[in-house]
Length: 469
Image (cartoon, rainbow, N blue to C red):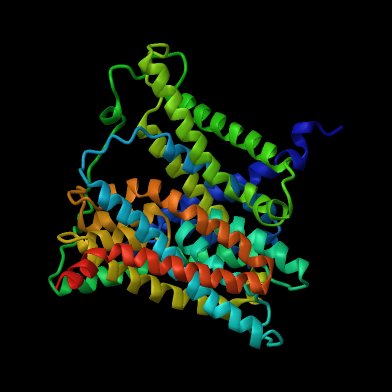
């Protein structure tokens, strides 16, 4: 008789974890030993994901990959990574102004809007005029909105919204593979952020406009740098990492209960058709909110001396978020299907290519205006982030500002607060767009107006100067 532990089904999930972690280690070797990969600054996690993606061409290996499990891992690690980031105490030493933080948040939102407009200006005409085309026919009119999700938000949100758009497309009888389309954009975004960033960096270096630190020695930090006298001692009966992970998962448990409660409500057609489908896709946003609430509770308990130990350690939270995001990148890339990729390869190339050009031009234009004295540091931080993830932005920034002496790093970290607040209405609009072609037209109008408002705010000083003259 076969025991429970000998059953293949009991090992199915762990087999996927084995594949992800093995690919990560091999990707790290490739990145360290292959010169051009090392110089490209492509994240190790993406190399690992692409390795799995290419090995899936082998039928026997492809059978080992469970696409649904990879998508589930991508979905959950997105929220867990954001929870870990949001729990940080954030004891930054580099000083920046509140105005610059808000402006950076608005720049982030403005770039999302640019990407959304570029995506829609490609997919709507393709849907209207190429629906019967062999090369362009498998596209959804609102599919271009996955560009800011893939480039700006990364694999997790690309998967979330891709799933929503795929369901809408299927309900309309359209064979649009939204999940694979979104994940493919996210994977290409990492390459764009890293490769284009490095090429532009070397061009500027040759022109003498900046210095690239080839030794790559930034600030070396250890856990002791983040510890206080009230931290859990190393000799405690429970490991610090255990406490850290437990707090992250407890927050996520409350996120799940909250989403279940929201899902059970019935508040009319708008709620059922537009808002309710976004509840589960916003797991990362609820994670940020509940993590912030947890941090406030801990602060209150510490202030009242009910809690005597400091349980939130920034070093361990940074490591935890890095782990979750690395796993997310590998799993998200591994979840892309070759068969589905063939059905939208040309629209994908158009969206990603023109999206990269528009993103580069817009960020460079705004950074020249906003960040006097550290324009290029700000550009590389934002360009890497808004085509890949924040870690890509920090990697590029570290090449020219290894000690984070400019406010660029601090702006990038703190801008998440205004970006989340200002970006929520845009996310709601993105959830409304796939309801119909008319809703997509309305979305184009709304985001165009929002882009004008955001850009006027960012260039307000120059505009006011002209009026004064």
